[in-house]
Length: 181
Image 1 (cartoon, rainbow, N blue to C red):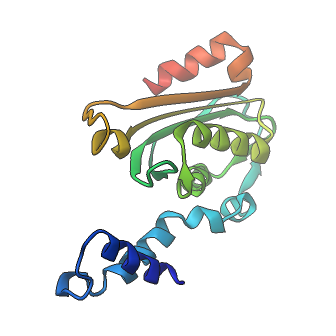
Image 2: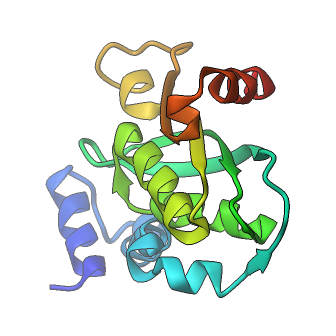
């Protein structure tokens, strides 16, 4: 059964008349949207970085702030929306700037929990750059908590992962967190 057919079945199970005008193409559109929202499953780290690693003598922190992210929680398949702050300490190589955002997107475009997403991004940056340290902070609002369940509209979740010098060196971690604020 195709994804489109499964969406038709779901709409029918919800009590909808799938032959009404407004829903005629909905199963097709919903299937296409879900494939887009989960396109990260079809991407690899090698593809998204595409060799954009460059030699550099810089050993100071590289930080990309406020990278928008859109993901779906794996528990309810409802969106969570937020921003990621990603930093690393180069050790001979720097990554092309847009590639950091592409790594965030690759992992966000999968069914996720925010805790795992944060770790996956940090470990991928570490793997690609062989950095002396990586720090990732994600702040997001979860529709599964806002639209259903406890319905808390002003809540947000913050997660962080610190690897290497970001974990071991208090000054590095403090500098990163102060720059993110």
